[in-house]
Amino acid sequence: MNQIIARLKNVTAGYNGESVLKEIFLEIKENDFIGIIGPNGGGKTTMLKVLLGIIEPFRGNVDFPLGKINMGYLPQASQIDKNFPISVKEVVEAGLKPTHRWSHQLSKSQKESALGLIKEAGMERYYKKPIGVLSGGQLQKVLLCRAIASNPQLLVLDEPNTYVDKHFESELHQWLKKLNEKMAILLVSHDVGTIPSLVKSIACVNGTLHYHPSNQLTLELLKVYDCPIDLITHGPVPHRVLKKH
Image (tube, rainbow, N blue to C red; front, side):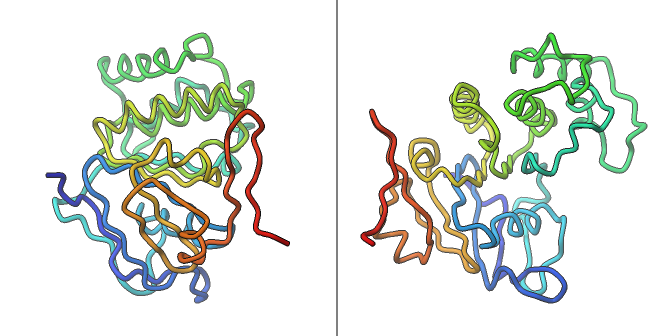
């Protein structure tokens, strides 16, 4: 039976004294694959930042029943400065360095591990290239390599599908399914149509959090969870299912 590795317990959090999240509770178990959905401004990214220790909650706490865990994080693409003078190699290797020691020297095996990830992502020919020459999908591949370089127990992804093409999106989904065999994953996404085929359970975040212990999501459940987003249906002609108006 999978054990709980992280828990957000009655967390209220926000910025400058204003609450974005109120009294949320979420347990994350080994090999979980939880899809996080909700409207813009609903608190999805804030919840991730609390979990990662980037911001402190106003009330409540984050605990790790089995002891502190290693977490990998892929932020939103908009948070990445592509003009920053750093190579693909350096980005991925940064995932193996202590966060407080950028001068830390990597061992030969660590460098080989980073190169192995870059090869697995199909990015070997960009090994020494600056990130500024990469497309959106290529940059996401490199950032995902960095996030998993240290073999985390929990991988946290904040809208990894943004600014990428459908080919990369398909590659990403296959890669995540493979990674989920050895780590838990939290995935924030606006693509409600794709999430059910990828995740094991769903949490809707809109000020509060409603957890749905399966990957089946309907318009009725979205109404119950007060989650005002469109449900997108995939088929021969992709389309959105909208309420009558």
